[in-house]
Length: 119
Image: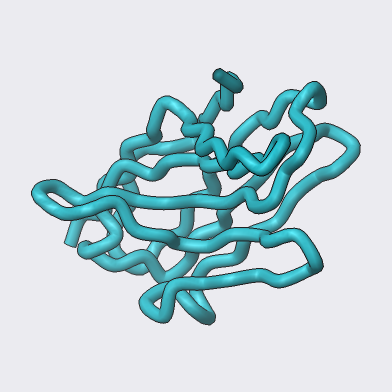
């Protein structure tokens, strides 16, 4: 199992900004997608934003125009910049890397990063 280390969560007021990050080990190969999911209390884990091989970038409709996913390839760090945060953004945010090896798909998750947005 790949270890993804997240950082940067915390408490922010509605309308504020926060950036979270995830260290992705250089040893990972066969990456098909990497990005961020979030899970609010009592709800399922949903995609927030991700990069997909081939250059595609996906955003959930609810965050388009407010969140930006980016990566520093030199440092192997994935970022999620969140602006104009809303109370419904309160959730545990998970870094995710999907890999393919020999036709087998694997999901790798970070430990989760709590983000609380106060209204």
